[in-house]
Image 1 (cartoon, rainbow over the protein chains, first blue to last red):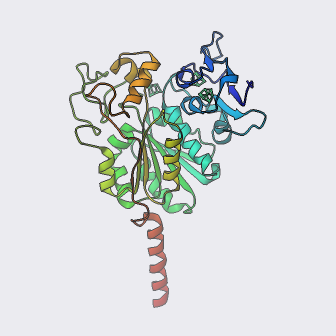
Image 2: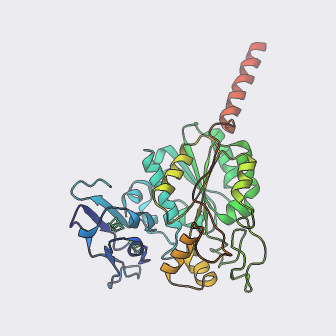
Image 3: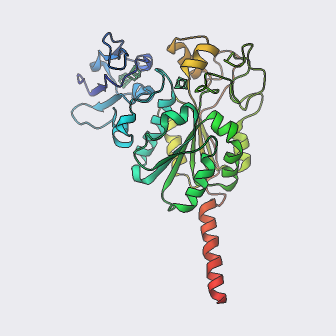
Length: 78
Length: 280
Ligand code: SF4
Ligand code: SF4
Ligand code: SF4
């Protein structure tokens, strides 16, 4: 999802809904989800991408390789 | 999948089978970020795994050459590989606390003694979690586990003035670091230093097992609470005063002060051959 300087991508099928991304994010960019994925988890959602400051805290704590934080439009990483 | 998984891991293994909230993937990611930071590709590294949760979840995820060692013996296998492979090929071994500091400790110490050029990443979840949550040699004293219903009574490797990293340093390890799996770039930097290091390097990561240690020892299914407890281990002022406390970062860096085993053995072999040829 792109709405500011950073593009955030959360892989719906890979997320295990641990919630660490929301826990560490200083801008509350994430929110718990309601829909189930194929593995039976309810993946978190990116709900405030425009507030992201690119600190990468969420990226470092996501244990399941399902989050990506990139510079909007460039595809490079902060 | 993120870019790291796409570039370095086998897609059929991702997402892996770790429990939701397990910190093992955080450790795995730090190592991959270090590899990316160093500009290394899948052909540059041979990856070995131990057993237990750390072994089972990371085994065969690496797209390049990889192998699984028998319990605690991955260090011995890597010694042979180190002698056979070109020096520029890196060897990374990921293992758990039981594998590295329990059953495999002697093999690990001999690797350190020889200053073998490998990088060992120990993913420590404070016990034997893949077998149901029994206590191990790093479980903090007093905590209830599946095999210590009244709390762990025996001293571990990480308390009362003992630190397993001191033992490894005394055995000859030339690079040692310690981090929590929740850390960011500082942990990546230590992994990168360890991989670049020519000699025996080890990074000790402490990570949460939410399913056993979290649920039974911390008596919580709340991942936020578990997260804070683990973070507190790295803050001297935090938490229960009986819990161990750690300093994160590089623990010991002896640079190139000791010869590396494989390269010095190869050099010695060349010398012997030259002398033998001279006698003919
Ligand atoms: S990069 Fe930082 S601000 Fe942006 S979503 Fe992640 S944790 Fe939140
Ligand atoms: S940290 Fe990763 S796995 Fe956990 S909820 Fe967030 S996106 Fe999902
Ligand atoms: S049992 Fe514990 S260490 Fe093993 S995958 Fe589950 S949370 Fe991780």
